[in-house]
Length: 221
Image (cartoon, rainbow, N blue to C red; front, top):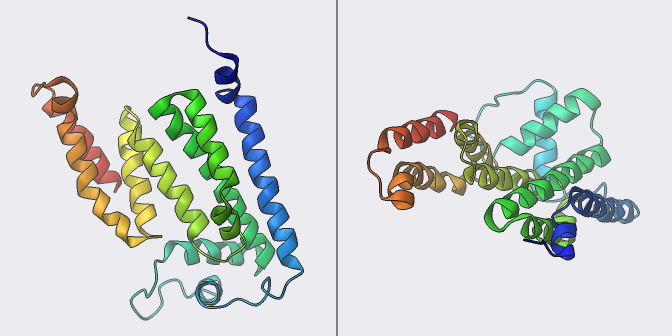
């Protein structure tokens, strides 16, 4: 059966590379434009809080003295960046761009698994052009990292391998450390793995394997 030319193009690696490159270019252009405004160095509300928290982490205050007021993974990643490279607001934003570019790849993989290669290519283009995501790369904020982890979690959740089960648990846990409400997905995914053989084949005999998959997910989580 012949595959239409546009389907082959949208599902090709060249298309995906072009889409991700274009998405990176848009985000870099946004950062370049932001540099000439007071908002590049003047951080307010959440970005100001994350920046101050990351600076404390970079100086060695890894644990702190109080319960976390906000989700902790992003300031810890930012603090590690500050520790290695020094406090550089452009570098921090370039980290967001890298997360956003990786999220495009995860969206492409997710779309490919759900609807085929062409769907994956179109989905990646959608995220590359998504203006709120472009805007988020210019903020010292958890959004870009959270998008990467959430799309990684969803892409792995659609996988069928043993490694994908464990990876689904790991990425869901990391996503919950950027947005705590993702914790509600943990019992849902575990139950989905348990019921998968019954839903797919009406077969209870494979429940032993599904229990193993659920346990792998739980251990990763």
